[in-house]
Image 1 (tube, one colour):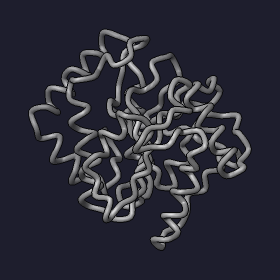
Image 2 (cartoon, rainbow, N blue to C red):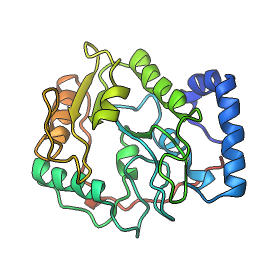
Image 3 (cartoon, rainbow, N blue to C red):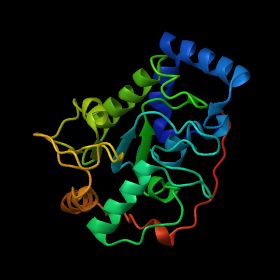
Image 4 (spheres, rainbow, N blue to C red):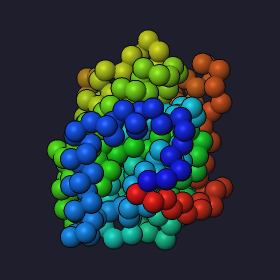
Length: 239
């Protein structure tokens, strides 16, 4: 890996010296040699290289990268240009349109959000083609949960958009006295309209306007969620 943003250096150095990470990296290297793995090696760390720790204002937590060819590029929920927009992302765009009256974009590339301080982080950063959760329980969850904990400790005023039960659990230890956690159901077609006792249904939640309201109230600049105005550029980095 090269060109890691310096603001993440301390966290990465601490994790990369631990046995679990050495085991994980060995496993991932073998997987890339013997199977089709996504995203491509040069895209695995994109979330960290596009969004510095210093710039993080919003965190959106996903689980697996997309496991189809050409989809994943290291950002949760995001797909590369010219790729069909997946169902969960369609619902994300529907809520953006309903909540902020934004035009639904033609591309599912969320890089413009990442470049504004939205950390688009999956719990697992790699997956085998056609095999969801195939790289689960190999160490990625330790690394990414540690990242959430590190942001919680090191920063104040971050909005955690926790979509679905999994994200609720990952964000369970976030200090809500110094950060904002907005819980909804998952944007997938199976969960987007479900509402619980402690969270709103994703569709109709207003989570994007709520995030900007919190940022504004804490003296931070809002996120420009309007993707239709951006033309994403491809970022490639070595593993």
